[in-house]
Structures are given as C-alpha cells and as structure tokens.
Image 1 (cartoon, rainbow, N blue to C red):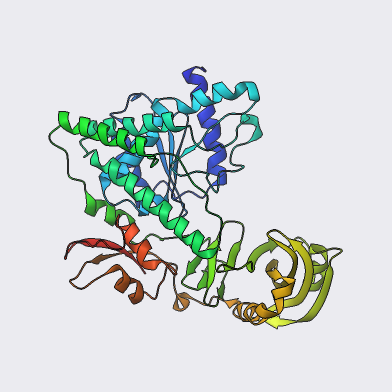
Image 2: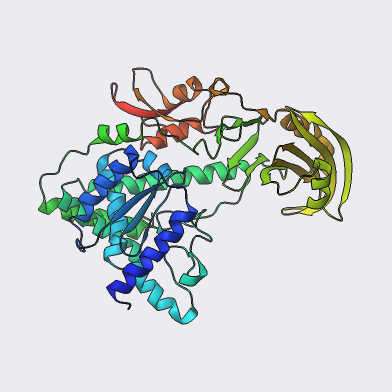
Length: 454
C-alpha cells in the first residue's frame, strides 16, 4: 500500500489530467458553490477530516459522479439535475467521499501494479463515456468497471454513516438507489426501442437484491440510533438547478424533440419521425428506429484551403465514389456524393455523403444503409440534408433547460410532455417523471413544486 503522501501526489496529478479533459463549470458558478457547500459539510464528518476536499461539477448531461485519490470529487450536471433533495445530493457526495476515506483507488492501484495497470476513477454508473483517455500513460492507469461490489457497498454504508452524522435523513440513500435504477431502466427502454444493444451497468448503489437489502438494513440501523434529522431541503435543491441545461450545454449543442440546435456553431438540423438522435462530444449520431439506417455529422477544423470535393476525395480514398452534384446551401459550399463501402454493423453499405464548408470549418454528413435498401431511404436522407442551415438566434429555440412548475389539479406527466411539444423525444413523459424521482404513473401532491423542461 502506498503512503498517504504518495496517494495525495497521485490524486493531484490525476486531477490535473481530468481537469484538462473535461468541461467544468467555473468554481464561482452558483451550482458549484452549492455542491461544494454540501460536500464540505459531508467531508467534515467523514473519517479523514484532515484532507482538503475539492468538489467539481462536470458540465454535461451524464448520469455520473466519480472520485480521485486524495479528495477530488466530480459530479456531472446530468446527475445533479436528477437530485430531488439536498439529502440526496449529500448521499451521492457521501458515497464518493467514502471511496476516498476507504482508499479504494489506492488499494486497486497497488493491487494492479504488477500488471502496470491501475484504477483511478470509480463511477456511479459505468462505463464512463468520457473516461477513456482522461488519464495519461505516465500514471499507468486505465478506467475499469468500478471497484467491485464489496467496495461499492462499503462506500454506500459509509455514505449512510456520514449522512446521519451530518443530520440528513439516511433514507435519501434508498431514494438515490431507486432513481439510478429508474434511469437505468429508462435508458434500456430507449435503447431497445431504437434497436440498440443494451449494456448492463453496475457501480454505486447497485440494484443487486443483496446489496439493496444491505443498504436498507444500514439505513434502518442508522435511524434506530438517531431520532432527529434536518429537513431534506427539497426546495433548496430544486432552486439550485433551476435554469440550468437539462442536457448538453450551448457549447455542445442540444437535441430538442426532432431537431438539433447548436447555438455556438450556428447550425440547426431536423430529422423525420422515427429517427432516434444522440449527441456526443465527438459527433451527432442518429438512426432510424429498429433499422440499420444511420446518420453521423462531424466537424473538421481545416488546416489548409480545400474544396468540398477535394476533402471528399481525401476522406474516402480508393472508394467507389460517385459525385452527384456541388453547389451552395445556407451560404455554405457543399458536395454531395454516393459511396459504396463496408461499414460497421452494415455489410455492403451505401453512403449518402455530403460535405458543407464554411470558412475553416467542414461539416461532414454521412447517412448510410444496406445497399439493397438504400433507394428506400434516399428521400429521408435528402430531407435531413436540406434541413441543415444556420441557427439564427434564440427565436429558433433555446436548448432545453430545467424550469420549476407548481403541480396543478389535472396535471399529468403526459400532459406536461404534450404541453412542451415532447421536447425530450419519444419518452418525454417518462423522463420528466424520472427527473422528479417518480415513475410515470406516480404524481406529486397538488401545489408541490416540481422540475419540468422547456
């Protein structure tokens, strides 16, 4: 086992790598200050109070949180949005603090040194989409799927202990468990509906029956020795996320119903019905529901002057490429071509390729299907491509943001989803309910403040 000083040095180096790789909200941002205040409160009652803990908010919609050695805690905005009380936020922070106090990363790193591989990040839901490549080779580390059930359970139990010490109701731990399970089930439901492969997750508050029972028993034990707890501070938690993006930030673009808006890049795009849209840091992706028909849009920053046709030839060398036409659309030069190629998931595919150029930026749009079906999708491909144009201003619509709403008699999640034009896609009602810690068939009390998305 490494010394504490070695642990602190390792954590500092790892944090420097992570901070360069992830987009973090500024330390003065109100949401960061709120998370830090609750985190410091939990750290003050933890088992290693001598450490200086640093709490960061990652500016994306991932349902995730992770800890680095030495007290560096990161919470993704997507997870914070789904907290419905200050006690729930404290429960997640307590779990990550538990990984630090129990030195789980140090134990894993020491155990794996014989293989020149270590583990630095433990996530609530893993694998971490953004984690690959975050840590440099000099640390000889990789990200693997969590610390194992025993370590996760120990952090769960430590979270219950710290919650109780801080005066929060430890039942919040059970609430988080239910929220994460609900979000996992909804994610699986969306993937199955789209035709994508479902990947099971594990990690903190994992929903294994024995784990869940152990957590419930730990909560019951804590409540038997402490009769009074502070308020859950639900309204404070809701106020903390009011106005923040529900999904990606303006810098990353956002999916709004069937549209994709990117205010910073100044572009917009619209898809026909039955297309499932996914925005990632690397590209905008979509697929026709339950079909092997795909879309991808990537941005390439040009290093030298080229025509769209020249870039097409360099991007697809030695391919059977047929240029359909060149021209101009929305003030951008473009080339349209059809390419025969073998693509992942689709053998003998045919690609509708379009490259749009604006100054130093090249937008590479690829749409493909099996060659035998290509003619059936040409009209849809054409409609998607024609919708690619300039994002003028906020009159085009803003990215989805959290908004507070007082529940009225006659309200339902489906009614709110319709009222906001299914802003979150096919499962808007389910997502609004999950955002508030409920299933779609559950309802808040009349007059209760809830989160919605506009």
